[in-house]
Image (spheres, rainbow, N blue to C red):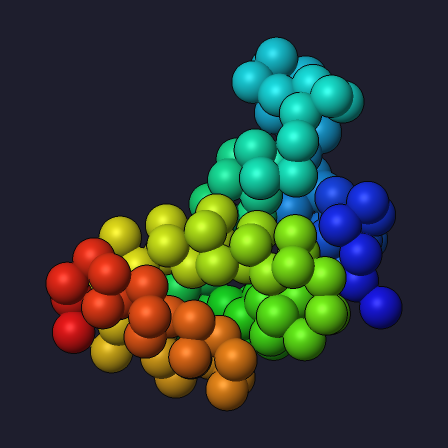
Length: 121
């Protein structure tokens, strides 16, 4: 099960590209080991997901599946990372119709609410 306290470690274990970017950002000083989960996801998970979407890479589906697991975790803090840090940023940069094919039921529901909030539907 995914928990907020182990989310950075978990996502780095799950996605080597995210882990690689995480260590690069640490080396560059953009983040440090005290950076919060939202910051790490914004600097490392989101850019990796954006590239995967742009390239229509199978990684995009795996990453959206991970977001769905985050939504199902039962930990509100984990869900907030999925919604406010990842989905909101993705929906700012991509049309809803471009990314909805990757979404599970819970991420779809969250994305619809976010889109309504930012007036894109």
